[in-house]
Amino acid sequence: MTQEALGQIIGVKNYSVYTYEKGRSYPDVAGLIAIADHFNVSIDYLVGRTDQREVNR
Image (cartoon, rainbow, N blue to C red; front, side, top):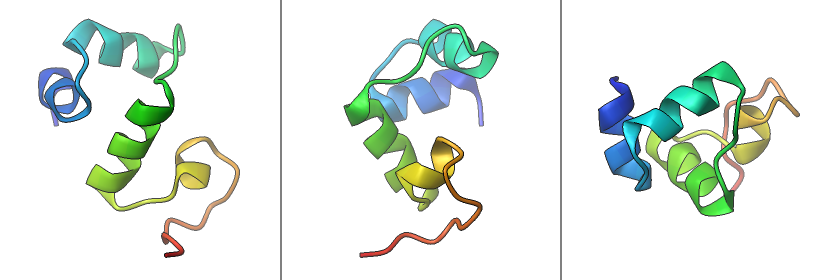
């Protein structure tokens, strides 16, 4: 997936996605939710709090 495609999904510019990848900045809560929903993983998985990808709903 390109930075531009992910940016469109979460509503930010591709440069913002680049800074997330490099650890220079982080998505806001709405961005984390959008990323987690798109990839069907939990936010805890995204931020490294668990190795379990499953979403508990």
